[in-house]
Length: 580
Image (cartoon, rainbow, N blue to C red; front, side, top):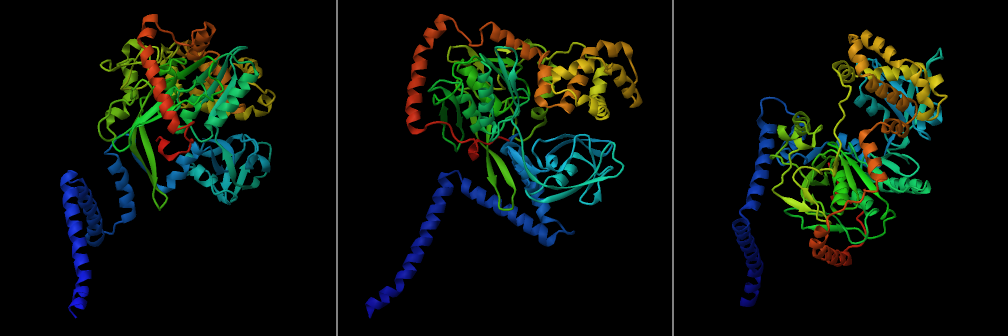
């Protein structure tokens, strides 16, 4: 009998023990973890309680979903300049660019006079298949008139993009046709290229322009390099100017093509993210070819990983202006409603150990946002002596050359922004968008004639005979820009470069446009000069080489040790490597 009574108390004893354990555990976790768990729990409860109170008791009806959507970016905005919240409706557009494709109709367009003007039809895309042509005006979408103030870039893309295999009906006005043309287009995957151009600058040296680091960038670069190698390329210029970055994994894979085995490419480290090193694996196809990397104030994130790895390993020469200075790694975290956050979890460091993240206060402070303008006003774009670097922390490349962190990649050779010929008349024409408007209008009105020319080299002589500057001056005056002959002819070369370039772009493609611009681009010309002089591989005095001999051996040993744990490069789409 007593035995049965004892068994009845066992569940009670177990329950009391569990409760006691929870209490003791909570006590120790709070007191020995600086109360962080308690603080987080209390704060989240306060937020939830606040939302419930507002929903139950506030004087007016509140859209609670909208309130939360507005609060999310505010909370993340208190952390750093790059942690961010992405609403579900925006996530597809943001990720499509780096994914390498989106679903749409396959056109490039501009909005002129409140109407969609088709400037280009993507080869092989859905629009080309049904007969849409450059020069067409889209005036109806899905049987509704789409002209006037409602026509904006965002609204046009919203209506033209859509799920793959879905239909969209377009009403199109075409020159020479009396009636409106109607097309039913089945949306499909539209490729978004990362490599804008790949061609030979002369008979010896090649050029590759990369606009971002996405999922398809690495294979695109391999194709570009193979194309140049077929043309007996003896040196390559990689243009990363205005490349704002993308996936860290893509940058690692790409720079791996140029480095010998065992070279540190980049490493990451954060409060909750242990240091992780990434080394070259020796499989690169272009380990010996001379390389020049072009950067400017618009080169950020993955661009700086690429340039930093080339510079710190003394593999090539960096030419241009100081890069943006973004050294924070964002991890994407998705929510069930389709929204996501990009949370900063680590910093990345170049092989020499420098973090190129420029200084910032917590949150998205105005000083950080205005940094590029501050650099311009300070004169950094025009004089190397105006660049402020933190020289209190000196780092060294593999050959012992000094480099500095704390604010972007400083190029080995500085090329100032060219201000020759800039006048107030030219600046007003640019700022009001008049050059772009005129170039599009001229292209549109002369498309049948311009179509006779297949390359920039063929089209340029024709354009030079058309007295475009005079025609532009009359156009600009009709738009309210008073004619100023002295200033106009002082800026003649700039006007002609912009007018010719934009017409070439409208009629041909980005590669032909860059071919034309690069003929007079001071940074590209400096890169060619360095390649011709065979000085693309940096050198150092003998004493520096001797000083760094032991350090180099230590780095190699470390690389060998790390490679046993990790082989090759991480996949480009690995979530951890996503940059905002």
